[in-house]
Amino acid sequence: MIRLVLADDHAIVRAGLRALLERHSAEITIVAEAATGEEAVALCRDEAIDLVLMDLRFGAGLTGVEATSRIRSLPNAPRVLVVTNYDTDAEILRAIEAGASGYLLKDTAPAELFTAIVAAAAGASALSPAVASKLMAQMRDPGVALTPREIQVLEAVAVGYSNREIARRMFLSEGTVKTHLTNVFGKLGVRSRTAAVAQARARGIIGGDVD
Image (cartoon, rainbow, N blue to C red; front, side, top):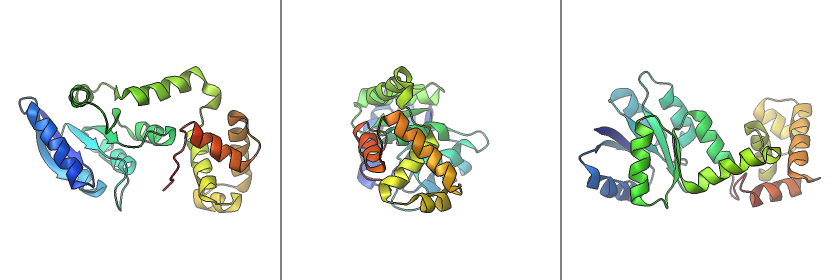
């Protein structure tokens, strides 16, 4: 029996997932629901949980990535399967680096969701076809695969921060920020900040709305 926590800030999404998964009550039991990242972490600390279905963005407090990282650092940590609407390279990389066993989009078919849950709970990776395609594309063309730090810098540029502001916010030197941007320009084949942001959005490396 897989003991599951549903972590999403939208009650209607949790209700929909519960309705789908209750069809598999012989294999899955939903122990609790969490409306915030903090609640998800607390539940995993206090209950015997096998798997968390984790959204990436909550209204306030911890993000799904932050909650995933904290959950995976707990003793006897449960697995985490991200279920979200966001499929940019930045989101995917952060979730996987935080320890997520899988990454699904919310338009995943119910049968595929169940298969992914079983796989993730057993420690296997579970990726939606769209996410898997993105990761394969990065492997085939590593020249355009930005590092997590390069993505962070580019997202800050997209928001409108100057190099000095980025350096201050990320505790880097301005020279380091410039180096990251130079690398980004080279990988994306552009010559300006505006072009880099546009190219990264077109490639799905960063989203059109950066929090």
